Image (cartoon, rainbow, N blue to C red; front, side):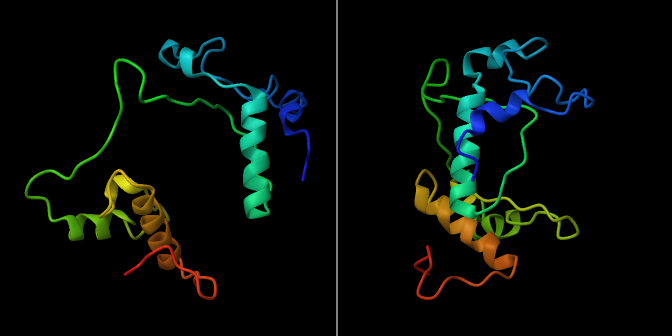
Length: 146
């Protein structure tokens, strides 16, 4: 693992105009002013990469942009999801995991789970995607109770 990931963003390949000045953070020149308040730093991105590397044993690629959002701030005041009245939750929750089976794109998170608003819902849908990919659960381990 690289112990000082926050500094690697300034040492990009000089010949690559996409990365010549490091990742573009939204508040930077040409960035969307909406995200200026939510801009992040190279050290924040570096810490995220360090944690991903530690947890998963892989070196994540350098981002081309980074931002964060505090949904509790005005004008949002918080955020949560609920299923609309009349929605067949089981059908939607199952089909959204891979909306188009010809494309290797998967959706997981509490918003499309049976436990909206709780981390358990996010973990449940993440495990369903992992199972769809054919990865077996570790011995004696499963996030899901069903």
